[in-house]
Image (cartoon, rainbow, N blue to C red):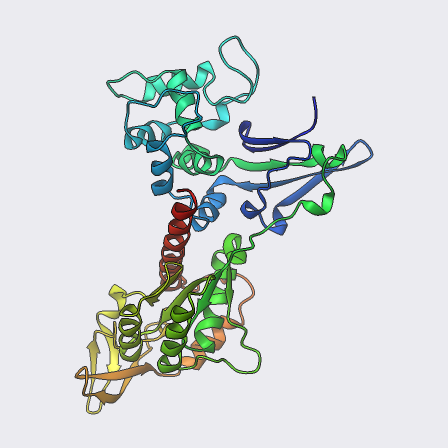
Length: 391
């Protein structure tokens, strides 16, 4: 019969491989996802991470709902199933009601081991869908056949009932029976996103924010090595770097991030005029409502001013309390506005960088907005790459 390695959501199998023909799912997991337990005087090992966290990794690997829709609407010519006559949006509406924890892999006359729709799940769908078309077991089987395993996981994560379920990669049997060397089983990704910023402060703050707030995806990003001095300090140097990368058609996935201030916005706009490769994107720190009316000090007086696109450097996105102020400095004739900077910004930066864990009472909301924007841009890069390779 051979030995099997299985990727599953709870008890639902979504992919399997046999003997030496191992399909690796290393990119779904990090080192701390490797678990073990005693088994036959040895240790049985497997990887495990709950679907809610795997969902974020899938997005950054390009497995979005958009990609799942493309697969659904372009079924494999090798599929043995008839195409579905309902839309992808209607299918998602159904899947949002499905509780995968109720799936079993027990054999019955109607359902083969490992299939998605045992009778009790079929009944759940029929009783909760509230739709005016038929959706039987064979339709659902056809739906999943048109989706790759990672797209199956992605669409099943649309049901809140499934988010706490574990995604498991059980590889132990193929290793224990000698089909695959243990060293061949790894975790993590090889194709990471290079994050490039205006200076060392931006990189250090962003790296710390990802480690603290999104540790389950921190291995998908890396930053320019800052040992011996940061090479792109200032918007001018960073623009020249972007221009150079565009000219050599760099193969790495790159996200360039500018500050949300006068110089950053100008440099970002110049970069957006360049002809850049599809694996390279440009952004600035996001505009925030909190910055529409922010305490500032000008040459003659204090006032509440909009600092979006004028003075919102990365330190403004830290927990700076209610007493923080922006000081307007030099006036820019070309854009007819002052450039400003946060007073005592190093104090706020040092307080954040010394954190080794989430600090109770610290306001991370503005940093979360930055990370959301970064993930959105990186997901777009990954999604385009996946679309190109799947043609």
